[in-house]
Length: 526
Image (cartoon, rainbow, N blue to C red; front, side, top):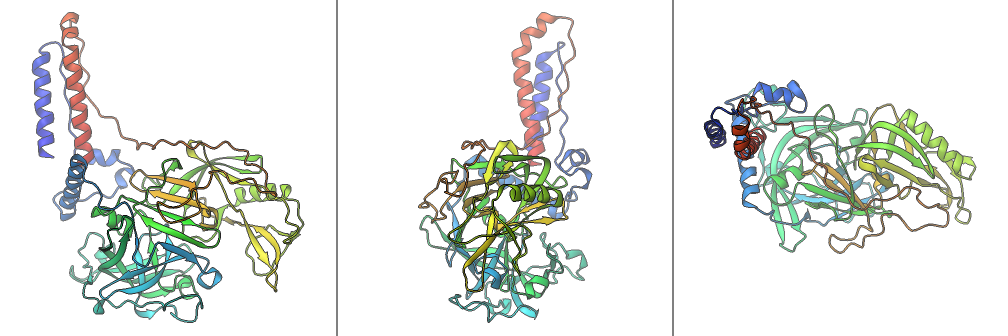
């Protein structure tokens, strides 16, 4: 960083000396953590900056330097993709486990297995541990091939409590001493649903997709001593794997140490199975749309929705933002959009309305296996004109004998201004959460193993009871760029000797270009 500042100063002196009386170029350097940079940054003055001279300040500079060295040296990530040592498979067990998707993971030494829910809407990996108030770990589902686990840090030779002084301890200010174990307390969107306990660092066991065997990665785990709300009623009884953008999430740890790229992918099949891969950025011809910040910060996987289409009827909607959340079983939209989409669906579907006990959906219809009515397509158009055809927008309803009795539009209203695209709308797609380039990618897939999965067409084959998708599909997508504040440079005064200035123009252009590059580098890396 000091060398960059010296380089900018030398370039300024050279440019001034060479331009003599004709022109003067100057450049004012702005440090990444200065007050001026703070105001210009996303989030403005409210952005969380480390205090100059603090440990966090020097840690941030060191991380930036190491990241820059990796880019300059072309350091490759160690693996193409990783998945839990128990396998990449994900699955849903229906109502017994809150309709969420789960996967088995192993943590600790000796390793203990946990069936964790997959949640891209939160960051922390937590498991039941030294329980004061936890869900029961038995009596759930006969199809489980092993018992649910309980974590005890004292029994793991590789565990250590995270101290309150650690940079990832958000509740450190409430501790009485820096070496005290760091507490955590996370409240979730579902009413009164939370997890609290202590943070622990331990090993998580993973397998490489390129055949390099088992890998042990250090991650931070929430020793969940007390759970509440939905976590006591069958939802994620054995823990939750947060996949969010926060530094404490498992994808962040795997990328930070160079194991895989800063991304992950998930694929959900219609039979409630699927796969998860860390480091996977998707396929070359997938569609993609950029993530957008919330209040100036990238904290969730939020995308822009330009319009919703039911059949051939498109409902224009500007400014709608939607969270892609694997931890939400179903899809929610603001009340006004819900009403417009539901009424249009009701107008186009040729079936009688019905009411099925126990089903949470409003727009339900009668049907039978031999008389299924035409189901209109439901398509979302995201920013940069990328269409997302929902593979199956309905939820089947069954009678007491297990026979098909009808179906419901699998959409629900919310009072929130932010929509939530849940697992049911992601089904049938290979979804890539590209955190490095801040974009979401998707492609139709049968969710086979990585590298051997058969990719199906972006537009599903025409079904007898479904009309064609009216929207065009764009298979090519360029990576969206991140906005960068333009560099400021002093403007050269007009000289009296125009011929002298014109003779020096090529040199001045080179100087200006070098100065701008130096300014951008200093501002970017601190």
